[in-house]
Amino acid sequence: MSGLLSGRLAFVTGAGSGIGRVTSQLLARDGATVVAVDRNLDAANATIEALNTKNDHIALEMDVSSSDSISKVLRAVTEKYKRPPTIVVNSAGITRDNFILKMPEADFDAVVNVNLKGTWLVLQQFGKAMVEHNSGGSMVNVSSIVARSGNMGQSNYSPSKAGVEAMTKVVAREFGRYNVRVNAVVPGFIETPMTETVPQKVKDMVIMQCALRRFGKPEEIAEVISFLASDRSSYINGTSIEVTGG
Ligand SMILES: NC(=O)c1ccc[n+]([C@@H]2O[C@H](COP(=O)([O-])OP(=O)(O)OC[C@H]3O[C@@H](n4cnc5c(N)ncnc54)[C@H](O)[C@@H]3O)[C@@H](O)[C@H]2O)c1
Image (cartoon, rainbow, N blue to C red; front, top):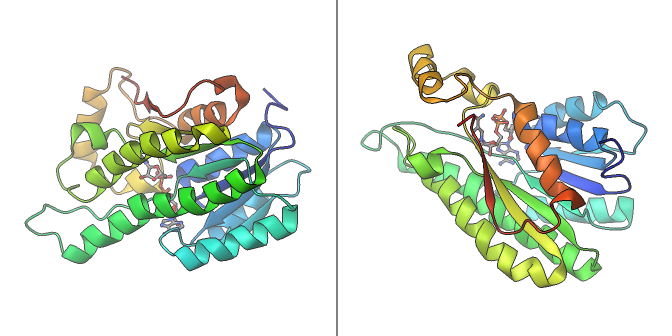
């Protein structure tokens, strides 16, 4: 696998933890230079410090829900590398779970702003730079199986992720002519800080419903993201790949 992404500049949001962190590691393993962004800069720095390659990786602070924050980072990246990334991974995401009857409106807005609008803003700004640079590329969004199944307590999160899947199909149609592919991964339940707080009773139920009878590991999502980022998936576009253990 090594060298599959050699010479490629990869941009990963939510790179300070979980799936985004491990994706940064695997993209670097496969030869890419990684720009790891997170609203938590210390966490993004820790991701980059742990990368074990000679490439000129960098960590930057960025809030995906802020258009200004994204513009600043895009400018900094194109100034440093003299080109925009050709791999963009939208892994930043949050949960604010509660039954709808108890959920504050602010928790609906927060989740939609990060998961759905944040993905839109990154696709728009980085997509524009990729189109203008005319170098093609691959953008990978992170949805969730609960977008399809529904999940109690996630009347904000689940639709935000369904929106990510719909957006993936739309933007793939719009960017296809520029040779920029857009796809999504649809993870099941993955062992990351995001799922650490899920009560054991709920975890046991999830495991019983999974054919492989276990949570997934972030590596198992990151491998699919690396595949979608690479030319090995050159005719896969506008689709979503479930990675749930069945
Ligand atoms: N863990 C799971 O079971 C699972 C399942 C399906 C989908 N997902 C999705 O995968 C993605 C990664 O999740 P994870 O499990 O690695 O979570 P995580 O909490 O471990 O990591 C998420 C990262 O995103 C960052 N982030 C949050 N809001 C941000 C913002 N506004 N701007 C920039 N960075 C921000 C956080 O600081 C954190 O470092 C998310 O989109 C999540 O919804 C996770």
